[in-house]
Amino acid sequence: MSEFTLSEKQKDLLEQLGVFLESRGWQPAVGRILGLLIISESEELTFDDVRETLHLSKSATSTALNLLLNTGKVEYFTKPGDRKRYFKVKKIVLKDMAYEEHKKRCTFTNLLKEVYAQKKNKESAICQSFKEALDYFEFMNNEFFKLFKKWESTKKS
Amino acid sequence: MSEFTLSEKQKDLLEQLGVFLESRGWQPAVGRILGLLIISESEELTFDDVRETLHLSKSATSTALNLLLNTGKVEYFTKPGDRKRYFKVKKIVLKDMAYEEHKKRCTFTNLLKEVYAQKKNKESAICQSFKEALDYFEFMNNEFFKLFKKWESTKKS
DNA sequence: TTTTTAGTTCTGCAAATACAGAACTAAAAA
DNA sequence: TTTTTAGTTCTGTATTTGCAGAACTAAAAA
Image 1 (tube, helix red, strand yellow):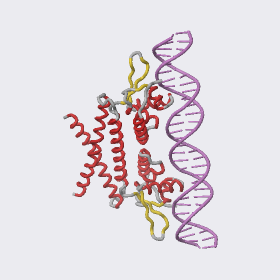
Image 2 (cartoon, protein in one colour):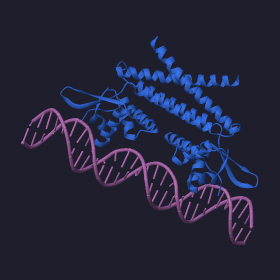
Image 3 (spheres, chains in turn blue, purple, yellow, green):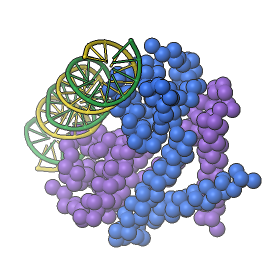
Image 4 (cartoon, helix red, strand yellow):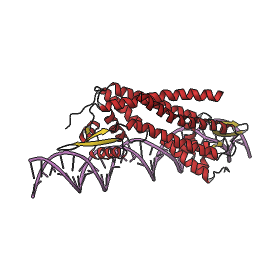
């Protein structure tokens, strides 16, 4: 029985994070685990910390943690003379998620370009506003990388 | 029996669009209908055009179209002496979606701020990299808004 | 050597989802 | 007045999802 608990505020934030992560395609339990690892005060949690705090079964905990490991969101380490695994979120997890969203937007934009390309009557009102939105998307995607660079430089100075 | 058909290329694009829309939380049939209205060459489609092209039941078609109407993605008009409804995507649908994504990112960023706020040991390594990512998110959100303004102005000139 | 620990993997099921089909409605046509 | 058109709404169900529980495994401890 591990002694790990969450404050009410933390529980509330965890739930909100979980719902958000679900909306990005993670299953509930996976989202809760990732959320827990992000929110919890202690940097690393054991398998049983996670299982007991979230009231999950061993199988659900195991499967979800391994999914998070395989997708690079989480890592673990062990302590000498201790067979338990200590799980923690990877540092890059948030930026990673942002980048994945960006890539998804680019893919979507390219899809829209194809849709536009196959339109026969490009002078129609609907097609013109479509083109306008498409240009906007491309503009935004291109600016994203510039922003990234800008951020990197302001961080250094 | 309506005479409306899609090319193979259009079918392929429709499927890709549908899958993307599903990943953004729309149900399959809704995503396919929205995709169809975006892709189809003719600007407006009738209830039966949609139903037959996508092989949907009347109930599914009706429910999905009404959902799209209620969420402002689609509109319809009628023709004098014709009781059919003619459905078309709203012009703003793509920019709308982009804006909704942006709002969602802002909400998420605020949630992360709350998470950071309740951290007790803000000097820990994990907390510092968290803060870094958070600052990056805020920076990006602000810049995105500026970009939007920039885009609007270049469009006018 | 047996037992315990720390999980993993497989099987099954409860709940949610997403749609079909049938029954229905309201307006227009015959 | 009856029938047809153009849907809508309700009910049932096949499919999918997400997880629990049980059986299993491999290493360490007793």
